[in-house]
Image (tube, rainbow, N blue to C red):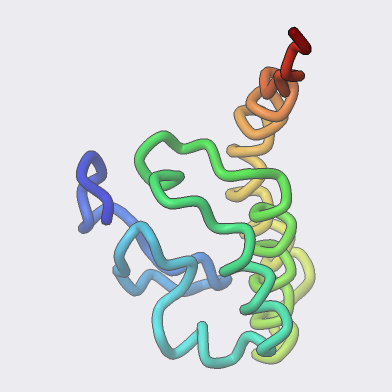
Length: 112
């Protein structure tokens, strides 16, 4: 559960939707139901608890989220330009995600 973010400042990521939803949710319930199940599964699989607070979702989650936004936009017949504008909102997180991926180091156990 998010503790640092104001719940009233997060809205659905579907194009042209300003419905308020919890930061942990990509979309409002009405739009989320429009996302194909395989894409929903990818969004869930790549979600990391706390990513709403530190604003550092993984590149995999961002990719899955973009698939969801695109699927809903196409299902609603939204213009490509409007869908692309909404996808750019998610691009804000790409830099932080890429930096986090670069900084992730794996440690190799040493033999004694």
